[in-house]
Length: 455
Image (cartoon, rainbow, N blue to C red; front, side, top):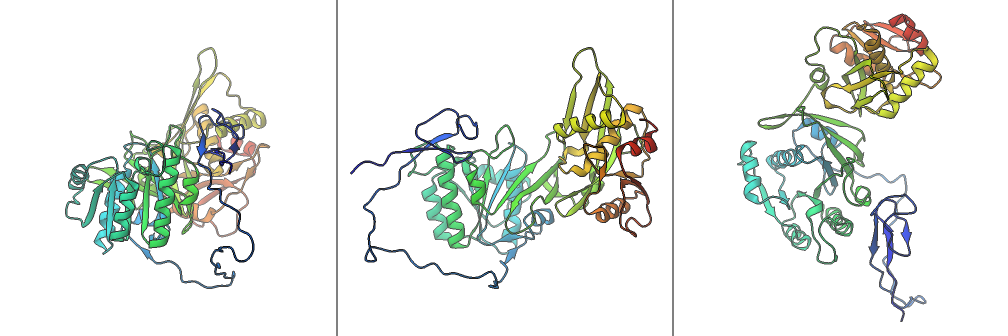
């Protein structure tokens, strides 16, 4: 019988190749093509007398099932991102830059869950138990009933989990796990995929919630095959800048709750402390109004959030003008500059443009377009907006201002923090923003003329 030929698969897009190549022809990724072990080739089954699989039980769309039970940790920001708490049997992947605080947060979470009566096991593949205990002592968690282990063998870990049957198992990290069934080094695509599959299968069959810690690449993506993110129920990214004390836990996928939900933490000497009112924290230190400073009322997940956009426009030396962006999309900044020049006649050639989101937060929603344009014009014209003014709205390529969602929630959050004026796209429903001075703009030209007297 002919031997089954090995296949080569791209770990990024899943395209198959007849032989190994350094670059995938389908997605263009480099060093993503890996060898796949061939399937066992036995004689084909013939007739009804051959061995058959079991009959799969079927349900209908109208079948009613009890919602999965949740366990809350008492860390409000973590429970919010998880969708209301930890679901039994769920698989969660947590990624973030080195030293951002992933292990600290998960150790605190394990201690909180253990305090509620859940049995928790923390398996570290990177640190010895003594090092984990030292961190627990610094966090004041030395007496927490959390079981520790330092192991990288996947077979031994699964055997231990099957024997103990904990309610929560934390694997730190998935890139250090090693399976003796795969002939490759730990951290390789095959090893990561195999370890993730085995651990996720264990979570589903035994009812143990499993949290996997994942390393990230220089592009900020979780290292390893993207199929791991499809296997798990929830993917969380821990974000933040080393120079800031703020940390953002963001859900990019969640089968048990809303995606794009965020939790805000502050790094302190006693570990990560949750921030109940992140808007006030991100606006702290904002004193007198200054040119280039504009407050944006945004929505992150289900919560309204106020952040400060800071812009600086200065004459550039001869040559190519510089564009520098922190916390926002650089391509969208280029679009806003092009619309201001084409539709409003305000040139930015020969000028360096710097844009920053205060506090280390990253904003992705298009509703920030108008706030960015206001910050750029405020710096260019050296005109400061009133201190009690918030701005939001989406800018189209024609220069029109498009309405955004959840206007009422944005204005309520702004009013709660003492803002009395808002510049937004019009029109809006009657009664929204009661008690505030609402300035409705229909296009960017009107906004530039009314607010800055330019154009």
